[in-house]
Image (cartoon, rainbow over the protein chains, first blue to last red):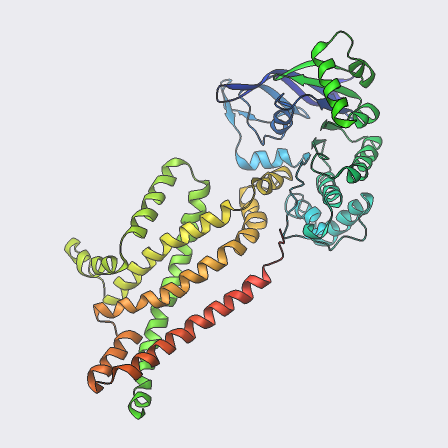
Length: 261
Length: 215
């Protein structure tokens, strides 16, 4: 595959919280249009990995490049890496979408205003323009009748769909989904995953942390299994879910199965 | 009762002084306190500690001591302030320390996910503060801040102790001439009450307007 198609490139990524090493040398490539599903037990570092990609967490060693740009550091001259300034980071983050486990919608803004905020203030769109784009995306996630609703007036599933619209309206190069259905009632999970599946079909590049194995199997281009801060196994959904000769993965999958049946 | 009515224009003058001093103090303490309050939340340690120190010290000193220090103490350092300036400075310094804590509490009450979501769509620090944090923090800021304003109006009665003829001193002077304390104290208390009741009900209306966040 040509290198111009490479959207996310992670090399030797290491990160510790105090003495606890949560990421212990991660290498990961994500090509344009791929859906990479990250699975693993809690504490395996998968959410931290995701949060490093748009620098909600800093990392200690290694490199993360999104569309060829190092996310966490700038060249301080003479090969010295320095942390980026807030404004540089903002510009980089604008091209990396993120959807959160707890939605994190802005409670003082309507659904439409939630989506419009980034378009207006970051993309510099005129109000009418931003409004049109916001309404288009809200309609795409099935919320045409909720433009003027405040988050507190929406169900969890609806809120999360606004969260998705808010992220994709910015036209990100990659979309990060952090356990976006974990906080939802079971009957609301489907409506959110359907939206994600449609985005995947339209070619959105995504990194998805989830426990939804059916989703991983049906939508994932690749599944990455993490444990102990390392990638223990990866491959096509079929390969990974077969878990041939991999005891930790097999044990993890068995635990997930039990929880869901 | 007529003497009480006759004294009204004089009390009115005092009331204006009370309002003027309170207004200035509310204004200065709001600006200084908000700047320091935002700073203390986001600043590195070398800015954090001076403000923390300032806030703790000032809240720990009785207001009267602070007023006397500004008026009688500062001249020892070759800084002479008029009594009004000294009082406004003392009260503003004292109140700004409270505003710092109110601003800090209001900002820190907002879940971290809000900042993260704002970062994730590419807002820079100033934009996050302006469009995401401040509109939510205002709601938590208002009730304790209005309390502080009411407190300022009441606390401003202490300015009478450095010879400023505010409502309090005006009342005492009229009593000094008439030897009829009760009606005048009641009248004075009523005037303070009217100001502060107006403030608190305005605050309730404001709070209702900001009640869009139902948790």
